[in-house]
Length: 130
Image (tube, rainbow, N blue to C red; front, side):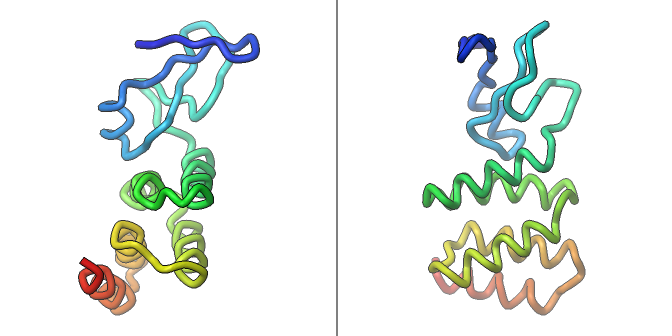
């Protein structure tokens, strides 16, 4: 555990392994007894879906598609904000060359929404880029 103080708020960084297990990166949770900061990830609670989507958007803006795919993949796997993930990824892939990790998550999101043909087409595009 690593505690940091930032502008008077103490934060506790999650170990990288814990963040990876959750499908997230760069996530912090509140230190015991301190003001909430970040996604509020704790051993007994899930990260807030809106915060995870915001983090994924930040990763996309920073041209970090692998981390964006991890965060969005977590949302799709847990069935949270799937329509928003689809919209975000469709918009992103229309503006920039899509990467296989982002296409995989988009395919997974289509599958979750029973859009099977779109999922297959998306997976094929991802495979074609490998």
